[in-house]
Each structure stands twice: as structure tokens, then as C-alpha cells.
Image 1: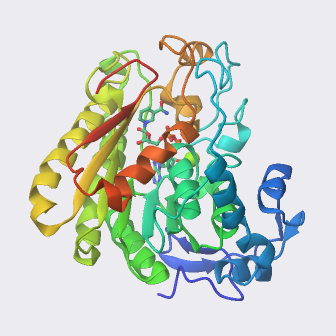
Image 2 (image 1 turned 30 degrees about the horizontal axis):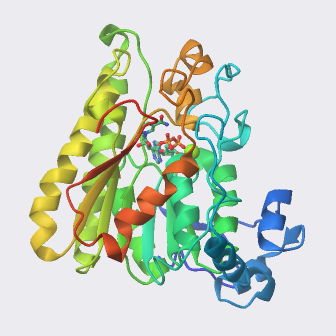
Length: 369
Ligand code: NAD
Ligand code: MG
């Protein structure tokens, strides 16, 4: 299947997971938000050809962005108080059906759209990020593109609107942005995902197993076998299938990153099934790091604390918990995905060559490690 390649006719290639076929979506011109315009200096609308051109390095206005970012990076960022940098509770109750959209959250999460500045740390790398449409995966996707990587993102088909924004941001950096929607609970799809990413990017160097399923239940008695299985399939089986499929393509110097959680070490009572998958993630990071170390492939994890993402508004937290979300941390607020982007970059970057089997935390003073 010839999915995943940017062409003059298909800016936004999608793989239809149910049919297992390439569906070249006819996409209308992408509206570029005020934020993105100020960031890229582009006009309000990018047509497909412009974005394809950008991916090939042909759109001067867009390809000029990394240079601007470099200049800004050299001047540094102003110091801010982490307790007041981002919104604090109370938050509005805002239930969304699973899997939820970042674009419908209030306040909208910050994935680094206007703030992340690259400095060539991942130039020429090829990355696959699951859950790349929103939350930590989106923050990593934006950062990776700004560091010079081509990026394939996987997401659930219901998350197309969020994914479109991410692909536009990747393309605005002059990098290939590959959209591969599909359900990770399906082994055949996971294999297809890796194959499409390898084909569309021309190889793979970085795998970020970041997608996750989290549904809060007050009692173990409220968790059906189907629900339990859903959590296990998404959080444990999918990384297993993806890593197996990707391994033959990974050269020495490649990097595998899993998103675990403070829940791995300090589980809350309402996340019985989810928390154990995060302990499993932390554990596979450590066993696989030992197994793949001699092959020169590094395996690491990121352990976030409470982060403001769609996962929390689509069943991950009760609305009562959401109102106070992050308020218990010493910083008095939840983290934003943008605040973890540099960790995903660091773990993939060449200068982290001695880091393997590590789990880096970011939890506002709560949680472990
Ligand atoms: P998110 O909702 O933005 O991302 C989760 C993503 O998982 C979704 O965007 C979706 O694309 C993907 N996904 C889930 N089930 C899928 C399926 N069956 N098929 C395909 N894709 C599927 O939320 P997030 O908080 O950024 O989550 C990213 C990771 O961070 C998860 O592994 C989560 O467990 C972990 N995490 C989150 C928090 C937090 O407080 N938000 C804390 C610790 C760890
Ligand atoms: Mg999402």
C-alpha cells in the first residue's frame, strides 16, 4: 500500500484502519489560526500545494521559520514563576466523549505551538509518535519537527480535527508530517502503522509509545472485563506490537520512549487498571533497555504527573476531580503538555547517548520518580 507519502495530490494521507486501505482524504484549505500565523508568518490559509511545498522545503515563508526560531533561541526565554505560568484550578466541568479533543478544552492546553524553539537537536531523524494528535504526544510532535525531525503521528480516527492541526504545524517547519489514524487495540493495525511510517518517512529512528487509555472507576466492581481489556490492549499490548514491528528497522543510535506515569509508583484508588499498565510500562522500559542496550538502541520513559489533556476530560478523571485538577501539587496547578516536550526531545537526542532504562519525571513536585 502506498500510504503515508506526501504527494502533490495528497497533503494529508490517511490510512483507513477499518478497511486497512489508504483513504486520500479530500481536504479543504487549512485555516491557519492567528497563533500559527504569527508563528510562521504565513497567510491565513495554506493550500495543499503550499503545504506540500513546505514539506519539500519549497515554501520560503514557511521554511524561514526555523531560522527565526533559532534566532529567538539564542536570546533565551524570560524567567517565569512556575506557580503562575499556567492556569490553576478551579476548572470548569467539561465532560467530553472519549477520546476527547484538545481543541474543545477550556482552557486549551498548551502544546508549545507558539513557544517551543528548536535548535537542530533531531535534524534528519524519523519519528513515530502514538497519540500524536493531543497532549504529550502532540507536544513531542511539535518539538521534534522544530528540532528537524520528520514525524508520523498515530491517533484514533475520532481525533481527526486535532491531528490536522498537528500535521499543519509539522509541515510549517518544512518537515514531513504523516497522519496514520487507526485503533491501536488491533495487532494488524499496529504492524501496518509501523510499515506505513517506515515507508512514508523512509525509515525509523525514534518510536514514542505515548497513546494511553485512562478511565476512572471508584470501585474495581465497576470495571468490566471489556473495559479492563481495553486498557490493557491500548497501554500494554500496542507498545509490544509496535516495538516488535519496528525493531528490524531500528539502527544503533535509535531511541524508544514510553509514556508511563506517576501512577506507576503511587497509584490512586480510582485508577486500578490504568495504574498497573503504567507500572508495566515503567517495567518494560527497564527490561528492554537491558535487552537492546548491546544493540545500541536506547529505551526510556517519561513519567508525567497531572497534565491538562483530553485524557482527563474524557473519562480519565471525574468532573469533581477535574475542577481541582493539579491543585494538590506543590506548584498548585496541573502541568501543560508543552512543559514536557523537552524531555521527549532530550531522551531521543544524540547527546543523551548514555541514558537508557531511565524514567524522567515531571510532576510539579508530586509523585515519583
Ligand atoms: P491525550 O488524550 O491527549 O492522549 C492520549 C492519546 O491516546 C489520544 O490522543 C489517542 O490518540 C491515543 N489513543 C488512546 N486509545 C487509542 C486507541 N485505541 N487507538 C489509537 N489511539 C489511541 O492525553 P495525554 O494525557 O497526553 O496522554 C498521553 C500519555 O500520557 C498516555 O499514555 C497517558 O497515560 C500518559 N499520562 C497522562 C497524564 C495526564 O495527567 N494527562 C499523566 C501521566 C501519564
Ligand atoms: Mg487526542
